[in-house]
Length: 464
Image (cartoon, rainbow, N blue to C red; front, top):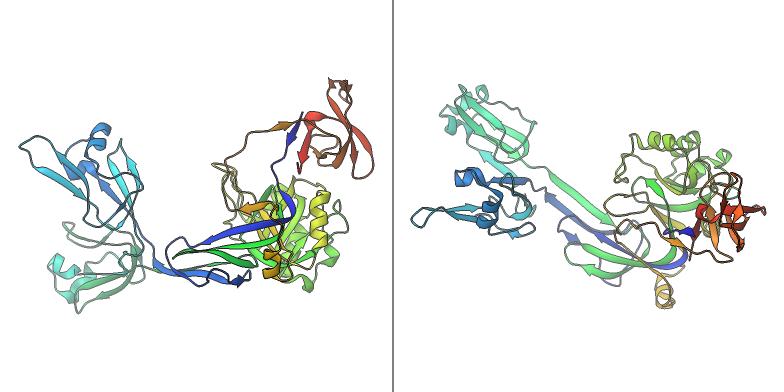
């Protein structure tokens, strides 16, 4: 039995990418429009909503148990609420006062703590107040011209909601009603003006294709036909550019002699390895990204500028995106992946180094534009083509499969670690290997022509 790989390497597939804003905005494309990687799909200008915490113990003026939280709550996590809407109601006895707890803002209930009796409401950015003018002098009962003597902040300071912005003798306090930047302290009116920073965001198409579906107020789905390659690890954000091959063969490292001003704005691809020096040189020459079979893990950390965790990558503050197709170390790129890259050298390629390996799986990916004319390409596509769409899959358990003659395999243990080949013979009887163990084996013809005997459990099967 061998391990069945879940990586996808496809020369031709239907690819659908959902391009969405994180908050409602203006969609700039319509269904049927053809788009390029740098086409703006949607844009938004919004004031970021803050989280508001509602403490039920303080509102109800008594300790509260988890069971009581369940009884008094009228809303649940995920519900949309309006400002002043009742979210909890409590009456201790028949003749007791009915206490109602209301939402402090428009938003969504993001989290409820039964043990602490607290509710977190994420403010709706569309209803967030961009400016707040606080009458600080009148609240402290001081003359406006003396206000600066009592302020604890200065113009340009960023303050969080609830922070003390002015005080008198440690007894009277003025609190910031919102989070934002102190824009002005006016000694004529006795006011402090706080402005929330406006965030500008937009989402690009990332790939060349056609808009197959519009998502009102958020974005669209872009569809194309092209080559699709998944990597095992990556760093960096989405990049697009012309694909340039920088190695002579899949088992050869990046050729530093080819790194010159011609690689500016290009996506580079090499075979088995890329050193830190070659990557730094490529960045200095203006290259946007690199597709490689392998590289050293410590070099990847140096490129990213920080230690890489085991959760999510792709948000690194780097101008260079890397997708590793095989693993860490010097590993020859698979012949299938290399053939696709070599065949479409010079075409536009879109890459994304985002990798998630916990709480779901997101693999780094490479998408190559293979269509000369988009409309005929999509209309004349084979209905049997595999479809690639945006989705976070649950981490799959290891799947084992029986080997068959002709299977494309990769060796996963020394002495042939990282080498590719095809199954040429499956002996019926267990065989003895180098360590003198007797196990089920397969005879594999490696890409270099050598025939070797490998334990079946040390093989990974691809492209079933």
